[in-house]
Image: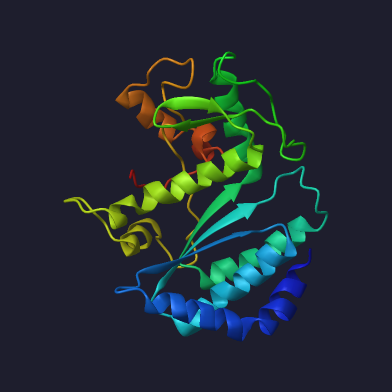
Length: 250
């Protein structure tokens, strides 16, 4: 659980192997548009090796954008040196990433709890989770095709689904044909005002299917307000306490 061990020792030890794996994957691409790097910030492997890979990508593919989704630890994290790992890794993200989507564990837990409390008790058990006290026998709902079912999943699965949906929604315009499609490079071009100010606050609306929860249907203007609400963000910050330099609705 040490950033320096992951970055200096394992990053150097496996650098050639990582480079070869990336090269083989890149050869399958007709038009390599960007790299997505997903890693944690609190542990040593995620923060250390993850940022070492980011630097490797910049050295070998300098013209290809590097998108990073970094999972930040919460205040209740059980790794005592996670704040130090996060600070050291953030320097590498600032220097070598083109765009960073920070995701905070506590924000994901709060969203999962919000959805769980809105699900009818006849469909799933209700339970409140904390970022450090999650159990394996959760009964959070998992919606597929409008049907709600009990799932023997950990809350981490629901938290991961939120992040996965964020990335799927963000890249849908590049993956599917359409008249309003944008390429992923345009996200960086339009939302990053200065090279090192590339940390974006992501928000998702809606967070659930209306068939799954006991909540009234949200109208378009309400969904627009939700998009700028702290309760729908992947990061525990209040957008009303600062200034928007750029914004995109996708």
